[in-house]
Length: 340
Ligand code: DAH
Image 1: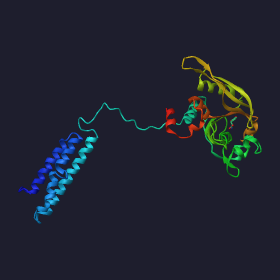
Image 2: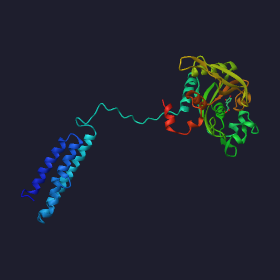
Image 3: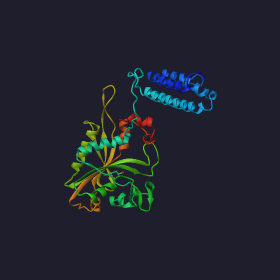
Image 4: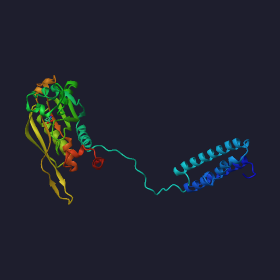
């Protein structure tokens, strides 16, 4: 030890160290301050701690205590200054020319986007939105919809039963019945949701998929309203040059029934306009009087029309995706391309 009083020496070391820390304007300067005072071999405060052994037994505890306090104070000041510098507060350490870091942002799934786009159009046409349970009874899924359980459409092969007479709904049509039971006409409702079938998993089928049910019930609703509304929807969704075709079909819950196809006009990259092939977009029809009666409404007074649409197919077409499964594999690199 030198002959200076070690306690005074510690006090002035502390003052000196704190001043040097405050002056350090970047991480490397701060590091050399740390080495000067606290470095294991050369550090000036470390040296005092190491010299404790040479002090008299009376002096040792007192100087030791002081030395530790100063060491801790300087360590804390170093840490605080380092945090300050890392925050870019000190002059010169903030580079305003660096590009910002984008926070990770989620996006809507392409099928959800299609549902929302379709929904926006029907909302403008006066529809409200509703939903029904994904697990439903045979009554709502089949029988009330004029589909006897021995009808091929009710075949157990196509349907995932949970317990006796309760199943995962195979279409969104049960929402028709639930809506008519709950709300008095006039009814104009859109009901998107998941449906389930015992289907083979392939490029155009998945055992769980989205459907959008539409239902209109009122006095004096005719086939003209049905056609005109769906044509209006198609032109708003795919463009004013879209043509719509109604092909006769059969569904147990509509009479007459139709399959609705659209033909779009697309503009090719070279600017030429081109008509697409017919694309089937939905099953539809005038609601069968039996269905209206099953819901407790008078089919002599009320008529209506309904449709069931597959937004998954519509999203595939829109984005030029040829395998429906890619929408459900949850590969963010794939789905991220469609994030809006
Ligand atoms: N539920 C039918 C299906 O899943 C689709 C459908 C057809 C719904 C005609 C309707 C309709 O509302 O009128 O295949």
